[in-house]
Image (cartoon, rainbow, N blue to C red; front, side, top):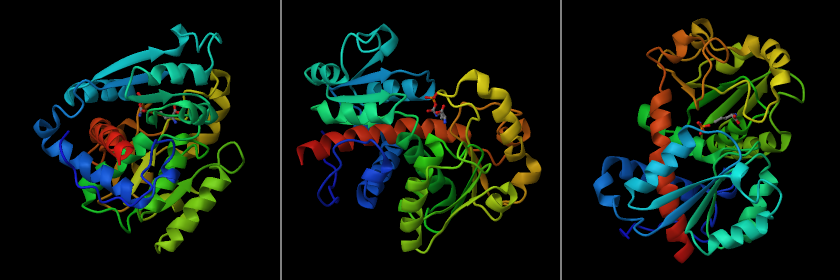
Length: 324
Ligand code: CP
Ligand code: NVA
């Protein structure tokens, strides 16, 4: 194992379930290590030799599967793709606790993309190895750590920037952005329709607001997309039809979310040097126009690449902290 400076104060995070569980210091350590792995990949080519990652999927994926799997290859380790549809777990023949207790006898790390966040918490409670959230209906911390790395690269800093999220506020990406941005000193505005079906979880907003205000920043939730985007350094959108949303809700959701589409006119309300982000997958003509996502302000493919670098750093750090 390459020796890394360990600057985090105890207790070290043992899993990555939400960013809420991660204090500022380990979060910054992971971002710094991700940048280092990206800069000097050859120095990390053997850090996962004879290590195995189990990747549990209940939902579809392009980026998460490919970035974790190729990430482990680049670090000298191995990854197993495990689709719950072909597992005893998925067919109700085996419990979560037995599944992860067995897996812990074989593998060094588990990542899971699940519907219910409570199921992920149950995995972590019974696993003897670190568990990483690869997206639940509630949160998507790996994506937001990759996004923070991308913002740091593009803007040269995080502190004091304003990120505007526009669209479906009751959303895993929105929740993790609120938590991650507020922890690292960014202000955030969410522009989303009024009503319980689209506004972010009030407890996530309250925690983020407390954290942001403690750092001299703010958290605003508004039904006015123009207000949300005003003077933003970053404009961020996500799918209007997240993986867990039933297809029969499409028509009503598109009608409700249409005013929140980021087009060139809305983008022009942000700062002139603003960047445009989307965690992907994207639908041109829905959450943003093609002109915006394919235009010069878009950094969406840098975000996708950074998933791999940041996840590699997360895996290295979780194993390091396990031994600390
Ligand atoms: N952004 C993201 O998690 O993409 P996938 O659903 O393709 O993994
Ligand atoms: N909110 C989206 C994120 C996809 C990466 C979903 O849950 O499908």
